[in-house]
Structures are given as C-alpha cells and as structure tokens.
Amino acid sequence: MAIVVVGGSGRGVGKTALVCGLIAALPELRWTAVKITTDDHGQAKPIWEETAPGQQSDTARYLAAGAARALLATPPVHGHPPTPDFPALLNDLWSKIGPEANVFFESNSILGHLRPDLCLMVHGGGDHAPRKPSFASALRHADAMVAHANADRTIADGLRRPGEEPKPIFYLAALERVSPEMAAWLRLGF
Image (cartoon, rainbow, N blue to C red):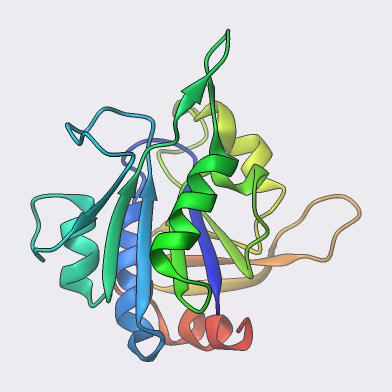
C-alpha cells in the first residue's frame, strides 16, 4: 500500500493535473484517487464515488488518467467554531477503499491526520500569488516541490529547510506528464 499526498500553494496551481500525471506515470499501482474538499459540490454524502471518466470534474479526470477508483470526500464539521472532522472522514474512507489500496490524496489539510509515504507540494502563481493558509504547514511534510515551467528539469537539492536534508524541485512543462526523472524518483519512494 502506498499513500501519496499532493497539496499546493493555492487554487488552480495544478494539483489535479499533477495527480493525473502521477496516475498515468505509475499505472501498475492501480490508484484510488481522493479529492478532499470543504466546498459544497452538490453531493449529499460525505464520500461520493465518480464512475464516469472525462474532463467534467476533478474526479472524472482521475479516472480518465487511469485511476482504478476516484472519490470526492468532504469531512463532517463539528463544534464551535466549526472544525472539519478528518479522523471520522478517514475512518469512513478506509472502510470504503480497503487497507491494501494505493491512494492519492489531493489535499493540504489531510497531512495533519495521516503520514503519507510521499508528499508533493505544487507551487504556482509566483512569489506574490495568494497562498492557502494550509500551505505553510503542509510544506513541512513535503518530500519534493513541483512547479510548472517552460521545460522539464530537476534541481536535486532545490528545496532547503533548516535542519533537513535538501529535497528535489521538479519543474514540469506539463503537470499531467511527469518527467522520466520524476517517475524514477517516485518509484524509489515505494
């Protein structure tokens, strides 16, 4: 079982595109892809399974990229002030997907509630773009940074944080097409 979290600096930075690229690059792992959201997507259930591949939603894009299953999950909210109940959501998710599934989670906030095998953070929009409040916290868990660029390239020790080993930054011309260097690095992580 492999667990990978893909988070990002903000909306529209390419998290879904990267998850799709990773699914396509590693098809042998038969991924279950889970988008965690606090937005109301018109689904009555906290966990909803997509069944039709396509481009109409993020979960449909996961299936089109080759995911075995694609789920949209919204954590229940409790208390005052309202707080998402990620432990309850994860318990429900694990019962639906099983303990042996290889799982992608698209979320920053989930990192406070599980320890993935790999965590990739997508940075986009430049230094002055608005950032999700959860990004700084999620970045502490990152095993690599990913960013859109004009051409594929890798800086092996580009992500440096005090007291930690340097980690790679993967620049990709298209987030939905993982570079061979990134695919090889990913395979080493499992």
